[in-house]
Image (cartoon, rainbow, N blue to C red; front, side, top):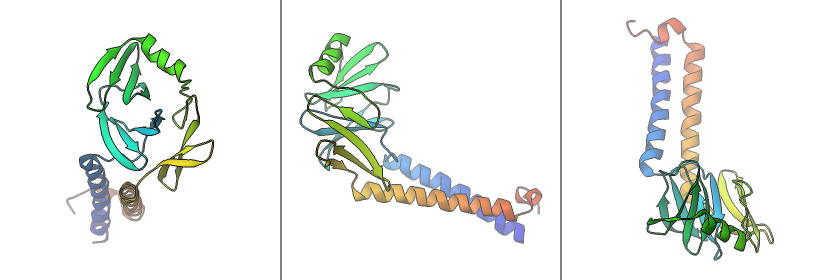
Length: 192
């Protein structure tokens, strides 16, 4: 009887992992942003694994699908996202229309605006430097010259993150407890 309870806890923990991961997948929410850029109008472009979300302050504007561009650099200029992947360069507008550009065009925009791709958490332009901060699971983009927040993760996304991490913690605790307390031979043996 005791092993049956632990077996149930073990498989319930695994089920929680899959359900929480599936909910994140179907809702389209990624847990965190990988990198960001800021254009000349302080429009923020936040890169997730498969798309770039565009915000004006805390207001969501649109998303650009970049699922085919794995491993790329990007900058934002003139309401377009300029993407460099390997030796190929593209300009993608807000509707997702892609136009090939030359490396000279890409580099001239970077040089003219003194854009530096420092790291995933810092972005420098001619006027200022921006930094991505993650404090208590809440992503912020801050203008480093005056510590002004130009983007902050909204509460809806924060609650989704907390729910996912909470489910993961509960599932991990259930699985570890079941494995630690159960007879290992009987835990996976369904004939008893």
